[in-house]
Image 1 (cartoon, rainbow, N blue to C red):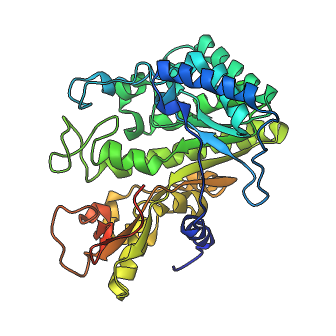
Image 2 (image 1 turned 135 degrees about the horizontal axis):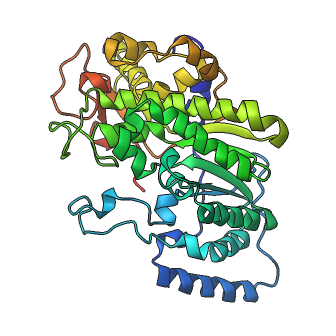
Image 3 (image 1 turned 30 degrees about the vertical axis):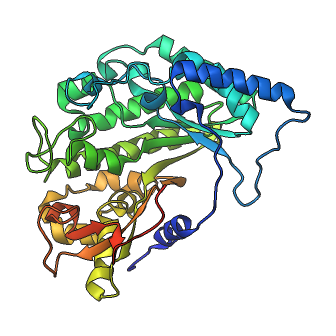
Length: 394
């Protein structure tokens, strides 16, 4: 890969490494009644143990962590899931697994199986239900205060994400959420509240969880909130899949930079913590050894992972994106460049799967396939090569 791409090599090494991980049954996948049965089973199992479970410390991979998103486990925050037709069977996110009320039981399970780091997200809407247009919700502040204190007491490191796919509905209704530059100051304000109340105990902060997924699924395909897309991309009531993903992404990148700037200038020196971002890192391999397909694989990375990391690290979008998209990509102004270049202490990688990439810029591809359009990068994404999947199914 051209240019300064050391972080990209590190990402490739991380997602290429194959290390078998045996995971215990996750109580978070169970319904509430099953969750309590699981808790009782674990309590009995603990009594039967003649010695405590072994510490999961691994010098090469020191932290056994458990990541969660507020909406996924706490519930009661998401309007789009309540709209008829958005979820096939009519389910909603009102309860989830009720971590809000059962967090102490959940922490007992974490302690028992040897988890030493818990990455969870704070619900922006629980802290500021109306964003800057309303007051701080003290009940929400106290809830996370109790959770963090309980984690610290058990020796579990809190690793906090500021937003995991959710934001106050008020901001969406008033100015369009991530589509408006107003959200940059609002996110920095919210982040500052979290740093102020919890930074004495939280030493690892994540600004955004998988913002590339939010941009693609929220504003291109419309399958995630706020469910915006063009008619040719999905079943949405409004949106523009050719332009809005790049507008939303631009505001997320600058919101990340604004939050980091607040942390650097006001809190990091006395709190001694670190701040970064977590990205979804789909890996792409060329479907053939041709130069065109190798470039297509690189282009696929640029249009998904590098889309966010290049601005945060280097201060601008990837060259491949700029060459193809031109004026569709917003510009970074001089006043944001300094904040972007000071943009993180660490990068978190969520890697779920890999694909092959086939060139569609210099070759003919069937229209409508994943990745084929100009705004997706002119490549065809596929998991199959010569009738063989790229990896084992799980």
